Structures are given as C-alpha cells and as structure tokens.
Length: 320
Image 1: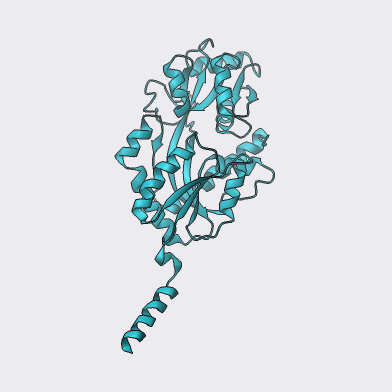
Image 2 (image 1 turned 135 degrees about the vertical axis):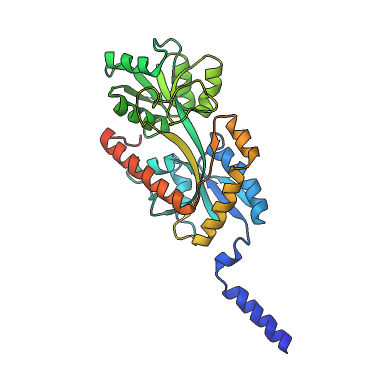
C-alpha cells in the first residue's frame, strides 16, 4: 500500500511540475518564413542538428514562405509560448513590421528573443566600368550628379535599401532607387552595368568580386570583413561611426518561460561558437555569433526596430 501511495505521489509531483521543468519532451519546430536558400535557412539547419543532440529531442526546420515572410512570422507569433515553435529570421523581421501597413505582428511585443546566430557585413559594390576606385571617389561622383546615379535593391525596405538610405544620409548625397523583386536579378543587372551600384551581403557578392565582375568600395561594419580584408570600411572612408549589417536570430512567441529561453540561448551559443560552424560559414563571409542572454538580444531587437522606425519615417520607406 505504501508503495502505491509513493508511486501516486511521484506521478502527481511530475504532473504538477511546471511545463518548463520537463522541457523539452517532444519535437521542437523552427519555422523559417522564407524559401530554402539565402542565409536564414542554411544557418537554421546548421543549428538544428546539434541542438537536437544537446536537448535530446528532435529539432526540425520547417519552411513557411509567403507574403514577404509575413506568413511564417505570423504563425509563430500566434503559436503557444511553450518553446516548441520557434522562429529563425533575419533583421527584415524588424524592418518588415515597420514598413508594412498591416504586418500582423509586433517584433517587440509578440516575440521573445533567444539569441543572435550570425552577422553578415554589407558591401558597397559597383560595376567595374564605374569611374570610382574608392568610396570617397564614388561619393564625389554622386555629389557631382545629384539624384542621377542609381542603385539596385531587392525591394523596398530590403537590407540593401536600408544600407543605401543610411549611406545617403551619412554622405549627404542623393541616389535613384531601382527596386527589384529579388536579389539575384539586381546583382545580375549591376554586373551587366544596367545599374551602377548596390549594397549587398558579403556572402552573396564575394564570388563576383573574386571573378572581377564587381568592384568592392567599402564594407558597412566598423571592422573589415575577414573575407574582404583589403576592402576598407565606410568609417575608414570618412563616414565616421557608420555601421550597418544584416543579422540572423532565433525567436520564440512572447510569454515563453524565461527558463526555456535561457536553456535555448545557452545551447545555441555553444553551437554557433563552435570552431566547425565558425569555419564553415566564415569562409562565406558570415560571422557566427551569439547573444550573451535572451535579454541582451531583446534589447538589440528593440534598438534595431527603433532605428528602422526612424529611417522609414525620414525616408518614407513603405512596402511594395
């Protein structure tokens, strides 16, 4: 009889324990609100496999593209805050919520940050026929032809658009924006000389720089890219303090228990800081890094969102 009482007591104790104490006890889903390719999907998958081993439960990556990533993002925003449905996204997670009239989510109120997973510098590239060898020369060229020279982007509010708007304000120049429906075609047209310049992620431009199809003038981070060590920063080029980069991160729905967020952050940090991932993605110009805590990442997202709100208002940036 005593054994039965003890068994019942043990069962009741387990059932009454908070769900976070038993986390995880089933499959975890990481939603990527974009199609396969790019940077978000492969990095999410690179994190998911070792995360499965660390947590002792399967971690799967599910692509849910649609409506410029709004569909998958909204899905996670509405998911139960239990740590079993996560979101892998880039900084467009914050900017899209600012430039869209009805994004269906608030990046600060509807999500809890877990951690950064990487940072990717942007690089200012021009067609080799452009008569400017440096960023300073290109700025002088722009000032001599205000509003005449164009730059390509993958669309309104894209990372390239934001970088170009920040650059225009810092340099005191005017450029003509030519938005495309995707990054591939914008790159093709810059390489063909149809549009003279664009800001692109180092990871996608580096092969074209190596082949001589694009000329790099400057990177947008405060330190030089390890993949383009001979390319100066815009800060070095005279735009003091200029810094802009794309980033990826992992999020959970708002209200997720802090102990779950902390557990995930700790494991993700170990993974992205591993020498294997550092080397694999570093060769592509992607800097793998993690936040020191969910709170630190949450502050980062709030600051980034506020920055986009200010820029969108000043430059009148709206979604296509």
